[in-house]
Each structure stands twice: as C-alpha cells, then as structure tokens.
Image 1: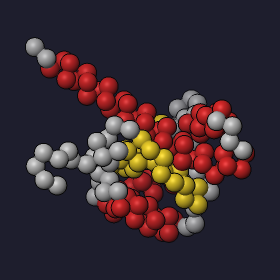
Image 2: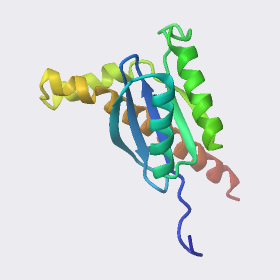
Image 3: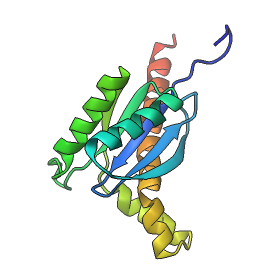
Image 4: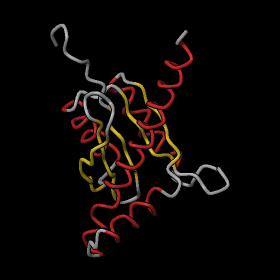
Length: 156
C-alpha cells in the first residue's frame, strides 16, 4: 500500500449453523457488508481450513461471529462450538475476533428473502449468507455511530 491509499479494514462475518456457515465481508473501508457465500459444514478441521483460506484471500483484520442467544439473553446450545471455531480462526490469523448477538437475524433474513419472492429451495441455500450480511451491517453501523459520537464530543 502506498502513501495516500486507504488502509484496508475488512471484516469477515460468520453465521455458523449446524449444516452451513454463511459468510459476509465488509468493503475495504469497513462501511458496507456484502454477502460472500455459504459453506456446507464438513468437519471442524476442514471448516477451519476453508475459513482461513477465505480470510487470507480477503486480508481480513477482524472476524465477526454471530453468537446465538435465546430471547432472554442466555447463550444458545451451539455457542460453545461457535466460540471455539472463532477462537481457532482468530489465533491462526492473529486477528481480533468479535462476537455479535445474532438473535432473530435468520428470521429477518428469511422475511427479506420471502419478500424478494425467492423459492423455498433457493432461500434455504442463501439464508445463512443473508443473515451473515445483516449481522455484519448491524455491527458496522453501530461502529460508525460510535465513531461519529466520539468525533462529535471531541469538537470544541
């Protein structure tokens, strides 16, 4: 990167399910989320290796992992497995790992896809990718609001 070029600050978001992992990535400036793909789960080692390859291809600086919670805030049944995958990914890449409450993200993704009139079979294949995109965009939006508030409070 040369002087004057913006630093890349890509974030890779994961919506980890029992059968699939939905992926989204931020733009290089960390402003918008784009759906990337859906990986069919195989085994923990293969899943980790495929995620590492994708993260390296996009030169991500942070991993955002949707953390399943019950409506009352308790961690969901899959939380420990998801946290273990997130830690392994962060350790292997040497990047920050952040968790994000993913409550209702899949339901919201499903509603969006139904509104877009996607057939059930197609929705099933992309719902995890859309959920990852929603999780990432919510995270990016919250970070932008936080940065704007800090900048505003610093003005004389």
